[in-house]
Image (cartoon, chains in turn blue, green, red, brown):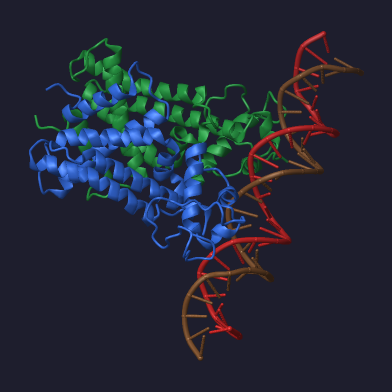
Length: 224
Length: 224
DNA sequence: TTAGTCATATTGACAGTGTCAATATAGCGT
DNA sequence: ACGCTATATTGACACTGTCAATATGACTAA
């Protein structure tokens, strides 16, 4: 009844093999199945207003089974966001891999960032938005850590550029680097958000616009 | 029963005076009262998951009265977002007013933008987020128009800077100006979003960070 | 093997939600 | 004065998140 459509997921399983033998829990790896189902729903519906019950239905369990793995609907969404940040990190890391020049690498990284956002807008908004924040609370640690791991890719590239004097950033000055990272991140994040919020109204393809924005970020608004 | 706590709102009334005489509808300007109540709820709770019924309660009407003025809960939220954009526009316009130098004006404008966002994060996220978008639809025209009016302040400043050769932007070239506007907007929007999403992790005050980001936007990441 | 334990899952219940349909009310032009 | 129509209410429905109580069955120790 609820065992047969547990999807055999490809990525690493932390707690179970779940291929069919030796399932460590009562009914397969439900926690992962729920995250997968929720991720699929976010992607399909481009929204996270679906009901927890719907997620349970998709996973083939009763409407209350999720409460054994997540304290809350929000708690499940946090896990989904974490998965999203991990994807983003992988993608940015892949983009910079093997590019020697730091400025070129930074552009590739920025492009990967924006493209990822455009491919799954709702997931992005979930990751960065307020949906994960409890009333009067702050962003859950899990989400912040996952986000910072993605940020580390950016930082790495900036540091490389600082060392090779490609960027006007003092090497080994954490604060100066932090500013630069925050600037770069702001640019790509703002660009991505405005694009997927449908506020682009200029006669340019998205690709061209990204290039232009990147050029401006490197060269600045003022004449040289 | 439902008349007495209609708040006498300060701003311009489009359809009614509503001071107490000559109320044009059955029971005061309910549409405005609902928008005000929703805006207050967004501000207080920093969230828009409150129920439509709660809004109605605040306005002192039955749970179904709002449906005479808004087709939907979303429809009401669109109206709230519109009001938010209008506030933003006013604030940016005030910031640039009377500043002759375009670059200084642009910085003031950016600061006003970020400060507004930080003062009412939820309202900002509502304005720019997906909450207004119907499934498989796009951003409602009303919201986009209101957003573009705010953008116009930015554009104006950029154009001034282009004319006075303060910015490296070709005057009277709409596309070139569009790029610059989008860049500037991306920077402030991304900065604002990351700040209020709690992703700032550098040993700087917000004010200092804003200044640094602005400097980088004007001068670029690369050495001059 | 068998008994027991405890994580895991189900069933049932409850207040609250968005929204529809039907009904009531009152300000307006004629 | 009268009816029209915009405005508001009442009632209903399926659905939601979450709590409490109950069932189930995989492992562990005897």
